[in-house]
Structures are given as structure tokens and as C-alpha cells.
Length: 403
Ligand code: NIG
Ligand code: FE
Image 1 (cartoon, rainbow, N blue to C red):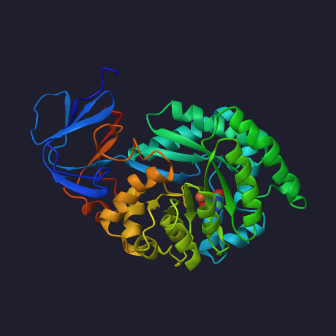
Image 2: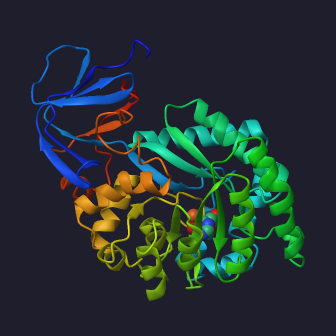
């Protein structure tokens, strides 16, 4: 390890984590979490004065938050569309008029890879400052093999420049690009025969995503694309049942996807299908909020059915221009009726499961990556409660303090 590593976090007030052995959340008080080789090693009730430990000064310690659904590879923001929505236009109306994702696609194709790297790097650093230590990052504003490869390379380069750990997702099926509006099958063939093999060959993405939604990609088209991705070694996590229930959750369960994301419009059979599978329900209440909608994903029904829930920001320039995970926790408590503890679980171990990294990330436990946040509050209930200002006191990634 580098010489900036610490031996642990000491003088902790409250610490909260998923306990993988007990398969439950655990709340502890006081003491020190020791670290070795970038991992948590053990807990001791003792505290240390040694300067090689990070002193939490009696404040709250949680695992580093995991943002399991973000779209940071965009060229320009879309505040004009935000204003149009405030005056009554809907997200779908703006998209049909050529705005929305296709607006971002035109802009992304114009900028260089170097410019894109800088933009993404700034965004990743902002995520870190708000307590996110691991993020899933999607492409999806390129919509050609070349521009999707450019986006994924830019994510990789930006990620190498920050301590934040990222995992990339190919989202070539985010929309149908302008040049294939009347010939969508040709574009789908390009994704299947060209884009997926190229991305997989260059090991640029761990996951493949599709915007499976009425007016975007049908469940049949989604299945075709995801089957190709799976054959090329990618894991599946995709946008499902966001505005209309089209059997997206059922498809995710049937295909063994890691997660089905959004689910504002999930059906009762979709909930049952997820409950009978290992697929995680990734809920994105920031999007409901930012679109000014009052259709919230049925988190209580999912939790009560035994589905593992993850929470994420969906950070993107159209439907949620926020990368603050603590704000998502607040929305989850108020509008999804999750308890603060359920919300914290969803933003750490639930999110880790949705990315297939739950064996070593998202928990303060021996052998797990030593990613943690010390917050300027005394207990976990204050985290979603005291919202709107940044409560991060210190971030630790792989046993290194980074702020
Ligand atoms: O997750 N739902 C699809 N894609 C994004 C929105 C992207 C955009 O508007 O730029 C989302 O909400
Ligand atoms: Fe999204």
C-alpha cells in the first residue's frame, strides 16, 4: 500500500453496515475499524490516539456509498429542457420533438475524447465529495460504435484519474439515433454484430443496458440485444418499466439480470417475478422528483415481497441532474417509505449486489475494501433527515483518506 494509507478509523461514534455473515444490517457504537492492505481487517472496541489512524471524533461512519446507476458521459447540460418542463412540457414530448437523449447525442459526437474525459473527471470528483466511493457509469449518448467506444474509453481514463472506483456499462440501446429512425432494425443489428463485440473485445464494459420502454426498445428487441451481450461475457442490468409497464421486470428476472432499474410502473407480476429471482430492483427516486412526477416506484411492495432493493441517482442531464446519494436517501425515506436503515442498505450492499460486487464492496467487514465515509452527524437517522447540505466529513477509499 502507499504510505498515505491509514491503519483504521478510530474514535467512531456510531457505525452502520450490512453484516454479510448475519445477512442483516448492524449498528455499532464506538471503537475502531482496523484496516490492512486496503481492506477492513477487524473491529476493536479500543480507540487509538496514534496519528496513523483517522479520528472520527465521535461521528457517524458508514461504508462508502455506491451509486449503481449513472450516465456521466455527456457533453452538455440541458437546462433549457428543464425550463420547458417547468412550463408544462413533458419529458416524452420534449424527446419526441428531437430533444432529450437525441439532443445529447448530437452534442457528444461533436466533442473530442479529451474534452469528454475532463468533463467526466469533474463529475466523478463531485460524486466522491458527496460520499460515493463506487459508481456504475453508462455510455449511451454516442449511439454509434465509434461514439460509444469513445464514451467508454473516456469513462475509463477519467476513472483512472480519480480514487473513485467505477464499473462501465454499454448503453448503445439508449435510444434509436436520428439516422436510423426509419430503419431501427439496422441499428439493432449494428449493436448486436458490431458494437457489443467491439466493446467486449476491448474489455470496455462490465455490463450491458437497454432502455426497455414503450416508444424506445420493446421487450423483444431488448432480449435480442441482451442475449448478444451475455454471449460476449457482459452482465445485464437495464432500464425497465419506467413510464409504462411493458414486462421489463419479468424479462430481467427471466434472463437473470443483475438488476432491473427505475420500475416506477412495475406490474404485480413483475414484483412477483423479481421476488422469485436474484435480480435487484434499482430504484431512482431522484428521477421521479426531477421530472416533477408523483409516480414513485413501489419500494414497500418490493421490500415486503423480499426483493433486494438498490438506490441510485440516475445522474444524467435530462431526467436527474444530481449526483448526491445522500439526497436520494432523503427522497427514499419520504416518498418510497423506506426506513433510514433500509435506505442505507440499498445505497451500499443492495447496490453492490446490483453490480455483482457484494462479496468485497459495500460493507464494513473483514476482507471488504476499506471504503468508508465519516459524516458530520452522530447517527444514521440524521443522514437522510438533515438534507440539502453536504454532511461529508472525510472519505476513505482503499484505506486512503482522499479529501
Ligand atoms: O435513466 N431513462 C433513460 N435514460 C435516462 C435519461 C437520459 C436523458 O434524458 O438524457 C434515465 O432517466
Ligand atoms: Fe438511467
